[in-house]
Structure formats: C-alpha cells, structure tokens
Amino acid sequence: MTAALFVAGTDTGIGKTHAACTLLHALRANGLRACGMKPVASGCAETPQGLRNDDALALLAAGSAPLPYARINPVALREPWSPHLAAAHAGATIALAPLRVAFDALCAEHDAVVVEGVGGWRVPLAPGLFASAIAQQWNLPVVLVVGLRLGCLSHALLSAEAILADGCRLVGWIANRIDPAMAAPEQNLASLRELLPAPCLGVLPHGVAPAQAAAGLDLAALMLEFASDMPDRGHAGKTSQGEAMTARNHYYLSIADLAHARGSDPALGWNGAGPADFAAALEEALRSPSLFERWRAGQPEPDEVDPALGATDAQAQVHAQVADLHVEVDVQTSLPMSLLRQRLNWLIGAAWQLHDVRPG
Image 1 (spheres, helix red, strand yellow):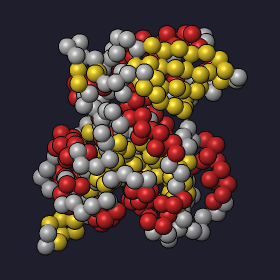
Image 2 (tube, helix red, strand yellow; image 1 turned 135 degrees about the horizontal axis):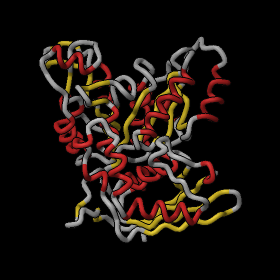
Image 3 (tube, rainbow, N blue to C red; image 1 turned 90 degrees about the vertical axis):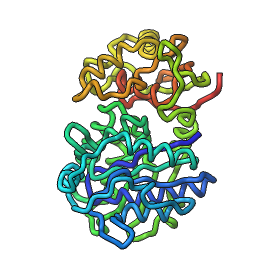
C-alpha cells in the first residue's frame, strides 16, 4: 500500500518544491521508498530531451530512485503562465484522468508519493478545473507551505480555510524562510502556530539544501496520517450497495471544544447539543450518503465529482464521551481515513485531532 500527500502553497514562488524535496528526504530517512510528482508544470525549458521543468527535475533528483521524466511530470507546458493559459496556448486541455493514471503507476512502485501542486490552492488548470481538485479527487492529505515574508499570515489563513472548505485534511504546514530580511519572523511564526488549524512540521532555514534541512522536520503527525490512510487511495472495492470493502479500524479522536466546533459551510455543519448528538450525526454521515449528496450539490460541477467519495459503511459505529475538558471519540468503520476526515471536516471543520488507529 502507498501513502501520498499533496504539497500546496500559499502562493507561487514561496518554496513548494524546496519543501517537497525536503519532505522526500525526510520520508526516505524514515525508511520509505519515496518519489515526487509534479502533475502539471508551466514555464518549462526546451531541451534535447523535450520540455523540462526545474521543479520537476528537483523532485526527480530527491526521490529514492531514477525515473523517466514524463512519469513525474505528465503535463509539461512551455509558457510561464497560469496552467490553463499555458495549456490553451499550446492547444491542449488539462484533464485529471491521465494525471491519475501516472499517479497510480508511481504508487504501485513506492511507499510514499509527494504530489506538488502548481501555484496556489485555487490556480485554474482548465475551465471549471482547479489545482485543488487533485487533492480533492485523489483523497490526498495536504501539507501547506508558508513562505515567511510580509503578508504571509493572511495568505496562510485564507489558504487553510479554502483547503478545509473543500473537504480536504490539512495535516500540517511547513514554514520556509524565503526572505532572510523579514521583520519579526519569530513573532510571525508564533502567530502562525497559534492560528493555523494544523501542526507545524518544521521551519526551513534560508539557503540550506533539502537533504540537510530534512533533519529539522517533525514527521510524527504526518507518519500517523500515512499509517492511518495507507489502506486506501480511492480504490477501495465496492459492494453492490457501493460500500467500501476495507479492514475495519478504530479511529480515536479528540475534540477540544465540541460546543463551538462547526464546519465552514453552515448547510453541512453539525448542530447538536453534546457528545451523544455528535456521535449520532457522525455515525449517520458514515452510514448514509445524504451529507455527501448535499456537499456534492454545492460543487461547481456536481456530475464530475468522483462517486467513490460518497462511499458508506452501514455498520459504522461512533461513541463519544467527555474526558477532562475535551471529548474523546471512538469511530469504528471500514471506510478509509480519507473519507472519515472528509465527513468530520464537513461536520466540525478542523476542530478534531487523530491520536491513534487500531485494527478492530
């Protein structure tokens, strides 16, 4: 089984590739066969071997083993423009299906695949298709790269809000010191740690190569995410009723402030009165496709949403109780973590934390 994640950035030019390469070195240091992927790259240079992108080449070099270039960068565009414009200029249209084929091929040969986005979260790839759809449709947890420079707080918070609003799991963020002359960097870092709804995986020093910077990353949260998500990458078998057929697991969660925990969309958010009501709401969201159908109806292209995202488990069970000043939740389901996090994010946003996974 392969674990994978999506590296998003608060903007273009903030060091997504540097962070992605650092993650690759850190994953390899943890004993994983890891490779990078740049599904779409614009601003490619003409070479005797064809169009080549510096970011994709860096990812290729940071992986565990050499690979043909086209396998990690299936769509290479010459113009240094937004991908939808560069593709139109080249007479091409970007679609997710062939990118998914390339992604699946990489997953078949590696323990971990780091997928780097292009530009910011909402960069257009084609009419009605945004870069965020890669993380959404492939059920990828997201690592957000924040370039430390003036304006980073607003860019980071808006990006995090968009990631969660799209039903994706923000598993962590990496700060990249792109501006060594930035005023009050430590104060900005403290604000990011306080305000972003995910743990900081590390702060990348300015001018330090990924292989050396990797030692400064804390991958504890990420490795837990990988361990819980490895049974599925959107290919779970289905029963005739469309239910996912994977091993049953117990997912143990904590919610610090259930009374104020709500998703970003009021039409999807939980509106109960306590742990028992929340357990019932989450159990219903796992057993029934109704919450998924309401979310899908609000998407720009509902008919293009992967129906596998609406998989259910009629035997799912959820128990919740107060422990100290927080709520402990035990979810027993055959659904993969990617779908559990999806339903949790719709119901209560980022107000939960996974702290253990056990078979059962």
